[in-house]
Length: 206
Image (cartoon, rainbow, N blue to C red; front, side, top):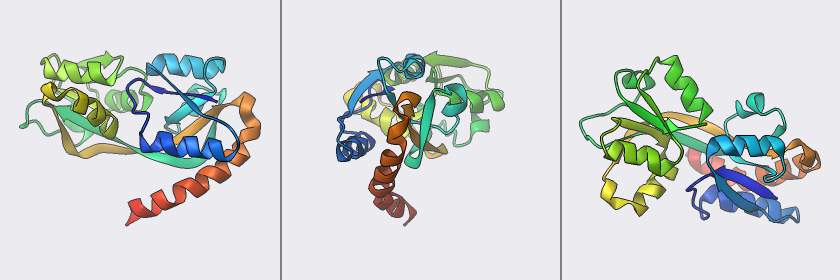
């Protein structure tokens, strides 16, 4: 099973390892295919190069009806502001209104929030690194990105010296999606993910 995700996600990301385990338990091998989000959406809809999407918000099903959502939350995305200036502390979407903001092209939930809060100065980036570079170079004031994923990139680029503003702007539940041609896998994957994700949910709740 070729499962797509955004460029620069670590192959050792806990979510990747858990999903690989779920597929292994039902006798399949999961191979990760990384690409820009907008291309991933097109490929996921076609179902030729990729068989599904690693994790996306619940709203993806409305945009790509060819995908089936496995009804188990697999991850919680921490949408977080990354800044160069430590004086800048946007912790709510409304705080971004007067700022220049970069975000990942194709992150529908982020696009919707920025539009809802009438943030005008927007720059779409094709990768996490590009969005972070825009902040480092002063082209934008802030980048709105998934926290753990952006921090993984920052570890490889320590010269950028950016920081995450806490608390996160929003916590977004994420779900695994597969192409409708693999409909027969919905039941087995749901059972596996329910089991694999159970300890995770309890730890988060403590």
